[in-house]
Image: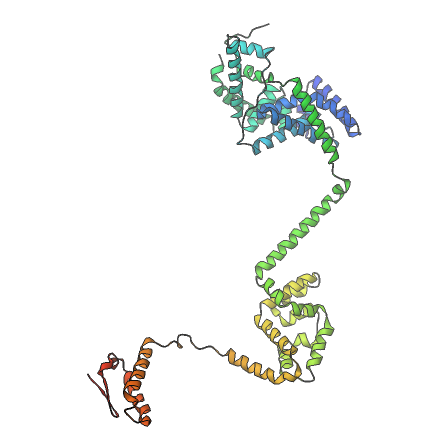
Length: 210
Length: 280
């Protein structure tokens, strides 16, 4: 990793992220020393986020589960080669994203949704309430339709654009982290994000109120 | 609970809904169970240590095999008859592999009698018979086409010399047929030597250029003439004239029939005694 990337990463990474990275590195060292059970802590910590990223890229819960498990297995098998030059989670994300991209390219023509149910709590509940006043059965149908439209709009994006949107808007990673995971520049990430948002805006126009 | 203003729903808000798509607790139990099963399978199916050590060697050897295959294919491309003639030349190659004594034995057996076969062999392939040289030398003396590469390569790659020998010999079918004939003659017992001259005579007679097949086919006009001649001879001559003059009459008729203008109608012909008449 060159100096500019290291500097960017240092500037962007928050203290909490840095503490997390240090804690992960200690666990990784335990696994490398032979404590295989320590890897379960890393699985428990990252399984939901990793699954979420893959699920939003594939829009299929079964595929997402398989790919997330495979990503953990690959990380476990290759953990002796991990030397801490990047954070563990970016390394794990890179494995997962690469596997998912490969899977999506292989199954480009096979796209069917297998969606999770939206948990109406917190901000999601506010958004739904702002979009529809009704309650009961009509509300449920509306939420389902909105979910399908969202997934359709995301699936219309290219794989790279979808990945950027998923990592930035849904998982909340920084541009630098996404650039490291996708092995591209920060400018590329910003460009892709801008273009993807334009497309999504056009697709979801009926649901957006200005 | 703070409500979002109805006119302030943005794209980010809609995408935020995606965060709320979360699986249930049962899903994670199943997820963990499958993951541990895969983890165990990965541990069990771990590659043995020798695979890591011999992995590069295996790759190198496979590359070498691939290169050898490509070389063999290239040789086959440049000398397409090599595979076919290799089988025909098996006795020669086997004799060459048995080294010098076998070849000198052949010469010694042939030299006292100095049979024509032995002389032919000595004249056509002197280097092979005279000193029983090494395989590469055989190639260089008898087959000058292949001598340049064979001299260089055969010292380092012996099997390549074999391949070149077989392919170069394939380029000379006369040498191949000559060797086959000589082998056949050598296998014949000494008492049957007169048969050799007979065989060579019959060979030379067989070797004459064949007649033109078209010339052997008689034309329809000739067949017609022959039929007319036979009819005249049978119906008019036999019994009416003397047998001694039949052949002379027949010659006359034949010479007249050679003229196609007279042969268009047999009714114009008439025979009286020793006279043949034509109506015009």
